[in-house]
Length: 414
Image (cartoon, rainbow, N blue to C red):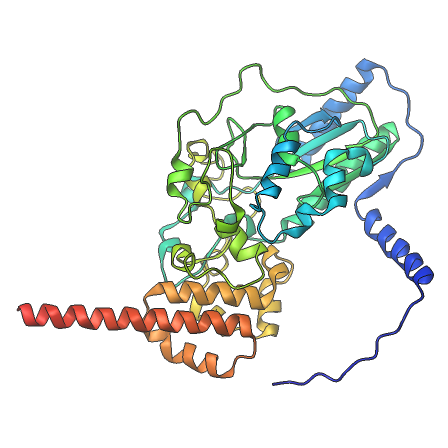
């Protein structure tokens, strides 16, 4: 066990600490904030023209449909609070922070003077033929299709920055953009602007293009014409395929999810020991889960000009989409950095990924990996990974013992 030397931390006076916080906080803000000065007065026709130019620019940037809504409070906020009060957010404590709740409640707290929100989409879904049979191979780890390439926060963030600069360069004013990080009711924003409807799997679903897209938002002080949902929006109807297919029962109520049971939450957001009763249900999922989207009828299509390909990532190699578990479990910290640099997977770190891989190996039924797992257990210093490795070994040994008993019974019957 490595013993780190004790460090003496510099005590910083509170006044200086506040100055440093403001400095670094302002730098963080500047990464998603733009100020083009005084707004240029526009009449209604000019605003409509600006919106059309903005949507055309979004298409040029490779985005999907873009819609616009007002900055009025979300009608779903009370439901979100109830979800938090019931503890369904699990250990995502940042969702329940009072300052973040205040920002969700009042978007003026995010950008003073905000009047409009530009809701943007970026598609990653590979279509129904983009998922190959290799994903079912228990010796390989299944990675959610949204993480088959460079981190989407970076890809989409660059596009939103360019789109915000384009709009505000023409009309002045201020803007702030987010990719899956802001304290926003973003699916509600998408629904009320007509981008889609919220389904029973809690995803925002476009009625022609499904749910396989990222959401990004540009908040702006510009007053822009808003889009509205159609008078009669389609929906899920009586369909419950996502709820039936979810292996852990996370979609236990219509239009509500218990994150504590969701495989995406367990493999990504959750930092601790995965509940033992849920481990066998995770199968070979090591980062995220696509099940509720794969079974959804709204996603049963292929892109016409790129069948079987992701609009964002193309056709990645199987070592990206479904890497070999036995190789992953033996990764060093340096191996992990090299393999997952600049991807969404990098942010969960080696420890959590190996935890997930250990669970998948325990579910694989492959007893040939036992010697390697036992050697790793003897040498590993990460207690989180060690606990899940021990479980995997026990699962495989029990599986081997059961197989031997079955073979013995078969021989005696013969």
